[in-house]
Figure 1 (cartoon, rainbow, N blue to C red):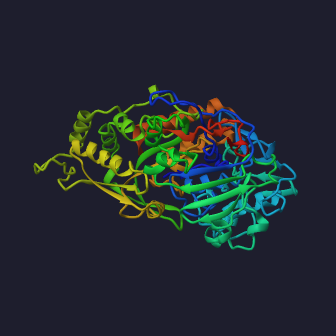
Figure 2: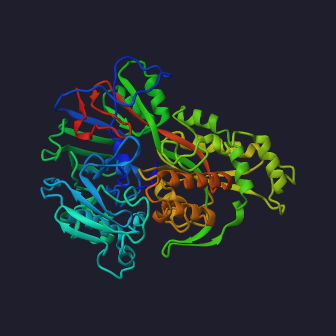
Figure 3: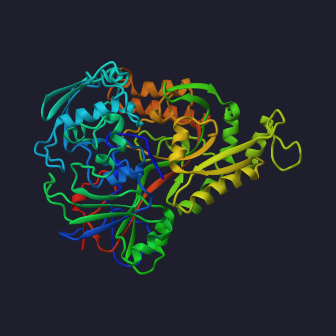
Length: 570
């Protein structure tokens, strides 16, 4: 299970909806493709297996669960796309700078319809942005709108609307920002949006649990929802008034399938594809031997870390509190990373569909540091032991485990979310084993995903060390996860050096539109965090999709010109 951390669109989740095919047996060591063959076939039903159950809040505005957004991507669309360099390009919306970094004009296409028949207008965009800033909004994405002039006043209940949003006509608006920041476009929320006419009779505090979101959601995408069976299935049919033309398929059925049964379900024809899947499923599909399944993969923006909750946190006030000193020494965290054989771990649990990560920016992003410029923390248990000895973590009673420098028992309490992925427990047990081999006693606990998220969001006292996978977005800026007092900074870190570098990298007055200057600052930030390790970077993951030999017109690579309405099945 993954959590979405970045915005402009959240369209990277939508990209994962597209998948691929081929003919003949795929050798398990062969190089995967990222796209399918093409076809003009019309009609038919596509059955898609979901490897994680959506929470049921089927809106990426209201839910940070990637499983919800994966469903939404079939019936709703973002307004802006990405090119192959992960830079924004016009789609439904286009833009024109008025005062770069300070004021921008957005214009949307005319004639686009919501699936209830109403026309999509600029009011829908303005409404959605106001929801994100509302004092009763309980989601994670207020920082998306925080820099719009007047958003803070709206969020504090001092204003009814965001003053920095100015409607020009039914298809255009001006946006004025409070501060001039470089990522004013990449970091701007461009959907998928909420319909004002459809939802304005629902109070913001009730949106996430309303039937209009959970049972009868609407969008502007190529397929419309006809039935939702909570936690099990979603049925969709083509939307004939879709703005790019009639979709190729008649229907799409989404069904939650236990991950251990996905390949079996594909082989017996129960499902045609599964997107955003795991390395284990990919390898099983390759070994199926009947030539009817094909694995597609491409470098992705997902990455996993082991985090440390370093401070108390007041969620209501969004304020970081007293330090939790147990893991405050960077040398302790460094020793814990040296103790993990990440290469072996990735091969065992991701089947090679990923690689070691030594920073907190996936290598696909243009700001990413060259790995040779960073400490690579290669597996070195002897070095880990020596570092722990030097810090004073020693086995004083002969039980094989180290006490802390004061002679008191030292135990790592590691938590991982539970779910249908059969690797969750063994991969967590492997981390425990690595740490215990260097004398660090480790307790492991699997926690239900919803409670896990809630405990991290509030920095629960019993949440110490945890595993997390983030789904990145188009904006490479990592501030939302690592800057002090950001709601999604689940580690609750307070690092003035890190904060200043992140602030400088977004300061328009310092870097303007000069990507080189901006990258230099991010490189310095990556070197700094590579040294202090606010978390342990573990793996950056490939995006994987498995399809049968009938699926056509799909390309999962970033910047692809293929859209969901074109996908078909022969």
